[in-house]
Length: 171
Image 1 (cartoon, rainbow, N blue to C red):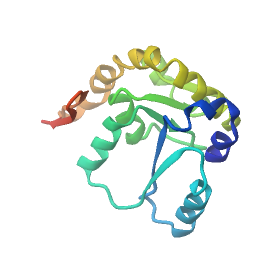
Image 2 (cartoon, rainbow, N blue to C red; image 1 turned 90 degrees about the vertical axis):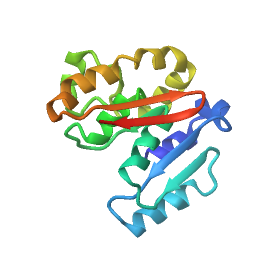
Image 3 (spheres, rainbow, N blue to C red; image 1 turned 180 degrees about the vertical axis):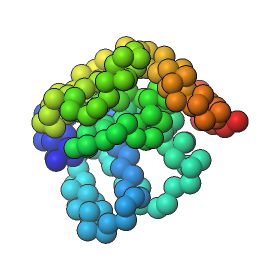
């Protein structure tokens, strides 16, 4: 389990008071699963925000832009909208090497890969220690994703982070 792996890692102890994990559990609605997550993070060393309420598209966009790191370690995925949104929002994405994201590599998208779930703590430690360098490498991701995906639908989304907060424009 990803949360338990992160919690057990002595490498991450310097970041206990510096990192907040956002855990959207809005779909599918599964009370048992949500209960397990809440119980797992109850006595955590980190701060977790379990988001259970329905999020509008605008709320989701703000959540993506407000995030800095996205951990995508599902057993399977077909390059979900969520993944593309996080890349477009210039988040540092950590994902599994087993997921079929070869096109991202071909296009020059910056993201991090791990070979197994047990390596998440080491990778997160690396990302947190090299955050500014890695964040700089994500700057081109938005343009690539928009160029490859959004032009086909004639939708332009501009998401920016600045000192005053988050701005989202859809045209």
